[in-house]
Image (cartoon, rainbow, N blue to C red; front, side):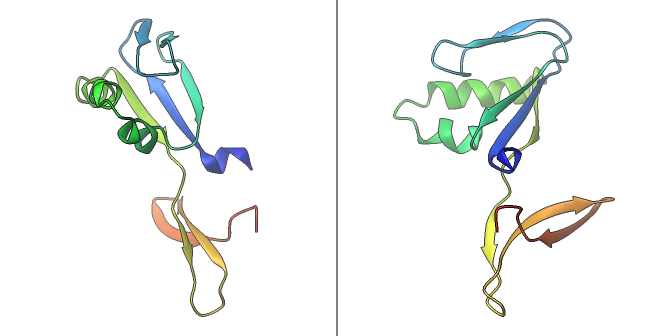
Length: 102
């Protein structure tokens, strides 16, 4: 269940790198290493008072040092039956599913 609320990122730089915007003091990821971060990393960094870490994430993505494999899916309420739904891709087709926590 926790995976539904996490961001998964991967170091695609080809070498070990320290990403200063991960955690309070940065995090070193080996080449091709993935890391699961609790919550939505992008919105968390965007909400910080200083834009420094958010800008560093944008630079790492633009420079193809890091990729985001998944982020928490938005939760939407179906007005017909009041059931929460989240987005899910199944065989390249986007659809909605009932979250596991319902």
